[in-house]
Picture 1 (cartoon, one colour):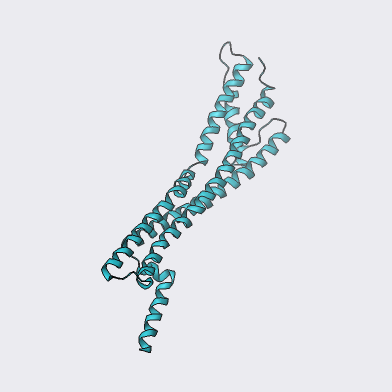
Picture 2 (picture 1 turned 90 degrees about the horizontal axis):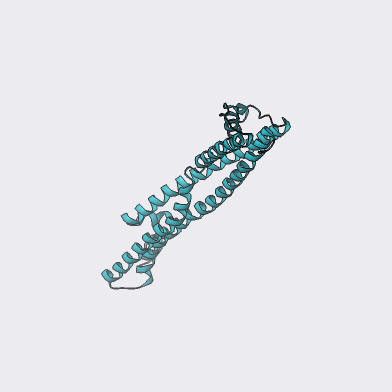
Amino acid sequence: MALGVFILQAGIGLRASVPALVASSGFFAKFILLLLLAISVYTWAIIVERLRLYLRVQREDREFLAAFRAGRGEAPPVDRHPASVLGRLARVGERSLAEPAAAGSTPMSRYERAQRAMERSAGDELARLEHHVGFLATAGSVSPFIGLMGTVWGVMSAFLSIGAQGSASLVVVAPGIAEALITTVAGLAAAIPAVVGYNHLLTRLRVISSNSATFVTEYLDRRTEGPVA
């Protein structure tokens, strides 16, 4: 009798651990957990890669802007700041201003042409920086529901076990409910970093966008002495 009690307690302790619950879960629950793991890994990869890129862009933008202002309107070589968005905008503006003026064109039309070219380039640069960031919003909103789907499936399986065994005791219900709740935890674990990362990266994108819009006018004012008619 004592040996039987010991074996029963050992089995309960084994199933009480999270790895054991995952290992003993059904096929559908394991599929949900693997799917959430893949989402989480991809989410973290995007966060780390984009954050490193944005930090580099912002650092080189500051360096380029400081060199531009120190040069009294003369843009420094873009090769020194390869990741700088402002450097690319300055190169586009320089090319636009260097194009031969059409017959009858005015300084104002020349200014506006360069401004439109730089604004288009800024839009392209921001679109490039936003690449993959939208997935974080999708992961943050979908992952909890994926985990909830696994939870509902696990609870349904627990009720089926109650019907099959004819008992609603805690020993019968608890393992199935615990397995079901693991998918909920996994869904939240995948969603929370995605939401936080998305909001943080979006804030940095807005700063880069604002700096780009400000630089367009500053660059053209310095290079053309303002949008005079």
